[in-house]
Amino acid sequence: MNLPKPKKINAERYVAGLSSFKQKTAKIKLSANESALGPSPKAIKEFYKVAKNLKRYPDSDGVFLKKVLSKKFKLDPKRIILGSGSDQIFELICKAFLTKKDEVIVPEFSFIIYRIYSKIYGAKIKYAKEKNFKISVKNILSKVTKKTKIVFLANPNNPTGTIVNKKELLLLRKKLRSNILLVIDDAYHEYVKEKNYLPGIKLFSNSKNVIITRTFSKIYGLAGLRIGWGYGPKNLIYALNQVKPPFNINRAALFAAAESIKDIKWLNKEINHVNKWVKIFYNIFKNLRIETNLGYGNFLLINFNKIRGNSKKIFLKLAKSGILVRKMDVYNIKNSLRITIGNNSENKKFINSLRKII
Image 1 (cartoon, one colour):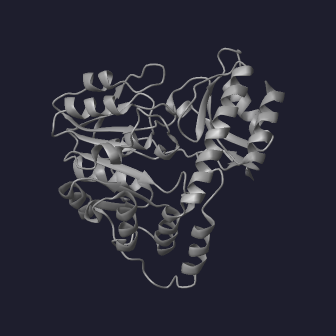
Image 2 (cartoon, helix red, strand yellow; image 1 turned 60 degrees about the vertical axis):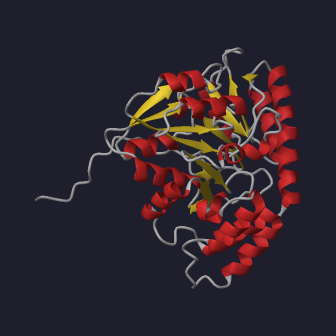
Image 3 (cartoon, rainbow, N blue to C red; image 1 turned 180 degrees about the horizontal axis):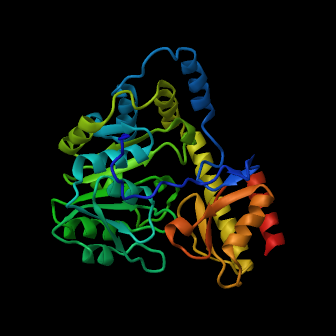
């Protein structure tokens, strides 16, 4: 009997940060870079308000939210596209631009969804070596060929937490051919306070060959609602809209996101909390002789080579105590774990458990 057969897809499946271990929901989840404090109370209130009228379809273009975003960041609403998380924006970019003859450049250690979507749409991945877990503009440029179509990078980078300064980013765009699309993922930009750093939106808002993405899943605490957005030149955003499905953002997400953007007080509370705990974690890891860097996101990457520890065993011991962190096998970073900053109680319990294990 001849049965339907799917086409062969040469891409790995995305493996998310675990929420449960051995069928038991984790007491403490520090594996997915989710918000430490959760959504703004105003966003939660709006969510419940909208929930009373779920029979209505959402606005397929998200006009209301685009107006809020354009006012907040001084942008052209016609150049904004909304997605079911920034993940969907990456997929739309790959769908609209890539063919089997194309190549995509990503940093050696970068968000794996870039390579997954690129491979799904037939492109070949070129990996640019990093230096001490820092993205190298020189190495990215060395990977450029006639077939290069897109360069993806996150700034700050996930999972390393390092940044590319504004001078380096401007140099990258200048040195790349004009027909190569540069995609900058601003997912963690709010946490950075360095003078030599600027987010993609501020650097490239008027560029003709850059698309910037942002998300409500991290600092705004709306990971469960799946909403993100992108900004770029009108002709490129038009192309993305051509392949975007209708009603891709639900009503609750649209209105909760709008309220999140407006709540500056809650945003600053999250930023201050995370930056405080990043420094605390860094100093504790240093005292325990665990290698790490002072990252610029809501997470830290740690390595156990110096103390001859085994990341797999440490992961299992933490998991058995009800604490889930992120294994780095899928990123090919050996003997390492990524730790998300949680709330005060979660952070203290993690540190106490880690000290007992080490």
